[in-house]
Image 1 (tube, rainbow, N blue to C red):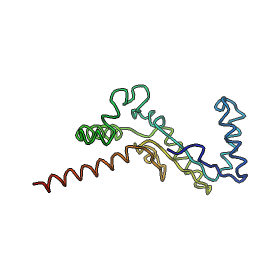
Image 2 (cartoon, rainbow, N blue to C red):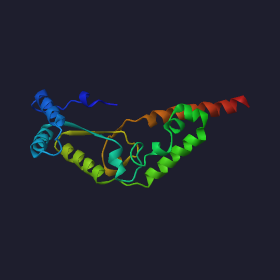
Image 3 (cartoon, rainbow, N blue to C red):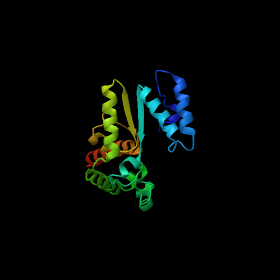
Image 4 (spheres, one colour):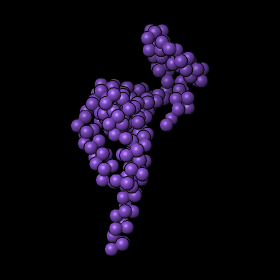
Length: 179
């Protein structure tokens, strides 16, 4: 996962603005003081490149089940039984069923106000010659369906799915060559 400390906000004023942003975010009352909000808006207006990081909270409003929150999937299921390569090798049909269920659930969901706001923000800044990159842990494609372009999805399931497909291919090939 990308560390927030590794992200660099580039502005016309340079790295001085980065330390100002860190100071604002370090304040415990960051979300409640109008002065901090005004300073954040000022920094955002100067930024040429903006990174938006999202996770399960962005899609929970759309009804996508989270993994660790209240009613989360890992409160009902054990991750080790469904979301690991070992689980797939032990019981591939169960793992495929779990991921099929998740895909079906996600297909019934629609983007919410947050997804649309991020997409609109990206389009607005693009018209001004600035860039907004959206990095998400979500694999529900709601950002894309809301209109966000070039979303970067960072999450373990993509890697797991590739390993499962590769493993499944070997299993199938073995079945045909053994006959």
